[in-house]
Image (cartoon, rainbow, N blue to C red; front, top):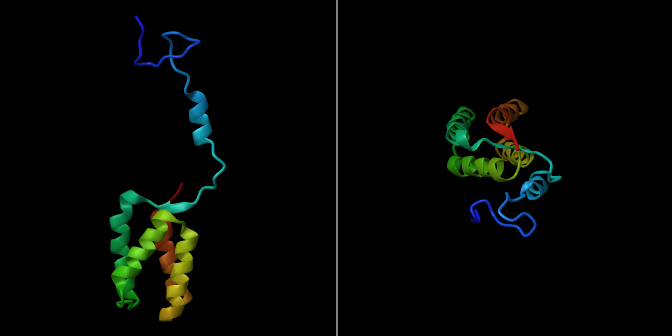
Length: 113
């Protein structure tokens, strides 16, 4: 009797399938790791980010800014999110100390992927 649950190959009739080659090829890509937002802690990040916005007086479009920053951290990388924060700092006249606090918050909630 042929056991088709394990797969069928011409050479090894009724034996196990060989999937290690595809598995290694898929998982050993040459892509660089980047810092992305830990999706399990996204809500906590948004709460802390709202606190920072209130602390530094960034009340205009707070929800849009926090959503954009969270999206950049989730899909792109921390470098792109830092560029966005620096641009926000220039528009809203934030100092280096405030920008560093945003960077510290982002580092706390990101992981290497």
